[in-house]
Image 1 (cartoon, one colour):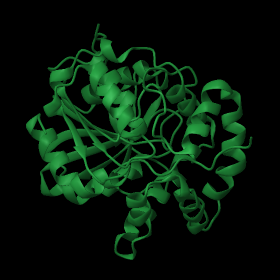
Image 2 (tube, rainbow, N blue to C red):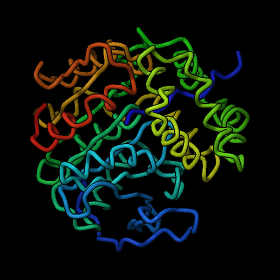
Image 3 (tube, rainbow, N blue to C red):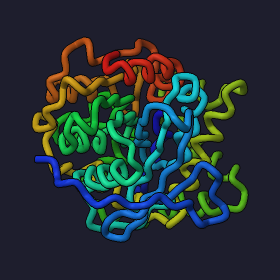
Image 4 (cartoon, one colour):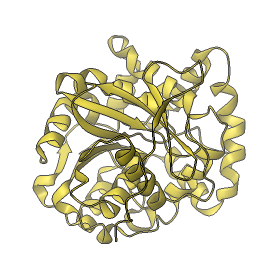
Length: 334
């Protein structure tokens, strides 16, 4: 499922194989039975959760920002129906994953390779939403087709120095401008505006804070979040954000700075157009269609691998088309 609304606007060549590591169950009693940690070669832990079919085709899920492994729960039923073993992987400093203050998007691709080899997954696919897109693209550049066979990006975030922010709602646009030009402000803003709600004993406090950001979302997304019949969406996203702040704001702030800055690679360097598919909503105000079109052009995607969902927003692309998205990922084409 695509990433939730951004936080409220702040005030004015592949690497060599790594040694395998054993998976271990997360030790924190507050985690659920789906949660695990894996030890990386440098001793750090990488948090993840498994959904869908336990024995199906392996798909790594890269959640948006701010989010945690629990976002994968929103895809559980669909993944199970299509025989997919969905593994939602948390990036360093978020949820159960150890901090790595110097990490980059490309270094996370190395972590992913270590995870894949350590879990003995063989060939994998990647499903990425929103702020997970750059990490999927880093993996597409870093990992050979023998390991990474297909990548699907849903409502993906692009490099702002290439795509610009045309079509983005004013709130997210201001947020990302601040992240790009005043990166040191982000962590104090998260500490002040999001962390207290995330750590409040009442989960409803964070949910209400999240819903307050709906003014920056398109009408289809607002309807999806407030629809009584779809209350699980808002609850699931709030749970995911709450867990993302498990270690505080540092990891999320670092991730925000990475998203808003230069990624360490150019889209034209990814060179994996035959393995990539993008899905975009015409009414996405967070990662607008204009952003997606520029990304697709820079990546060299053929028209058949760039799917526009008319009338859909940032969240509803996945909500309404999730079955087709997963089927296309398994088939290697939309």
